[in-house]
Image (cartoon, rainbow, N blue to C red; front, side):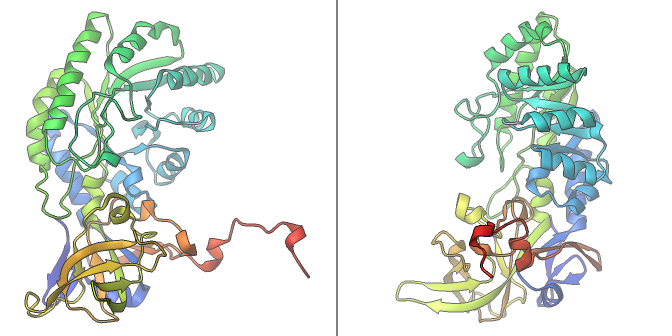
Length: 423
């Protein structure tokens, strides 16, 4: 559940009317509910309390420092995938011993910095990467903790672009190659291979893919024990889905009931890496209707937010619920089908197609729900558009957590060669 609800005729975030926020801060505007964010973290933690997991929030879902700090303040660790995310994690106050580092393409500089900061471990995705970390650790005279990321070759039943656990994906190592790595582990003198890691995809709404992957992992752990391998950690990744439209995703409680027997059987310390489950429904994108355009075939609601602000509909054909900030009267009788589109010069710049919405007018405001995950973090300056402001609501208070960009921000790092300058 989330705390974006109508009270009388107005849409609220916690105890603040969103209309007041857009009047004050303008649009496009990302609005986050602090209590929704924390509630989703606690739901997962409570559901798995028997095994006391380390929940490492996936920074890529939403990397705003305020979001990270709010979760770290409640005991979360962080799952990172770049040197920039490491920098953010440390700036947000996350203890290095609660940071795990994935990514198929870590650079030498990124690896060196993470070793210096003494993170918990790297999730390693290839033999080549494993050997490279070993070389760097040897040069730095360090012993480094790593977990082998396994590709369990299971179908997560999600969009193909966010599937990561099939053998045709770029992520992880198949079981046989991983087994071979453990056979030569003594050659990697500066590595402590202390865990296994899986992450099979994102927006997964069923428990079956997790059960299939964990069953395979349990068998593999048994094989490793026979050759004397003693592990400490099992990182089961993230990917738990949320409700965008008509999905019926598993609750934290139902997920826990399914996976706990398998996890307890491993007798390993468990790490999770949820992102969307925690932050997805904790954020909205507020936008203003600029124009209403009718053609012989379509009606278009043209808004001031675009695919540069929220790319999920364009990239994944993803559904996001769209609500007016003012609840309409007799909405069913006065509704009409329309496309909600942005100002970007691309036909793919849309938030909804053939969506039945209340009859709208220029100057009305809309809320695009479920925008907390992979919204701002995937935004861009395409068409030289400044990125949106972000605010966090805590009960009846609001905090700016990222200022709106200015035109000067767009060119802050650009330079014109002297020969092109004219007096």
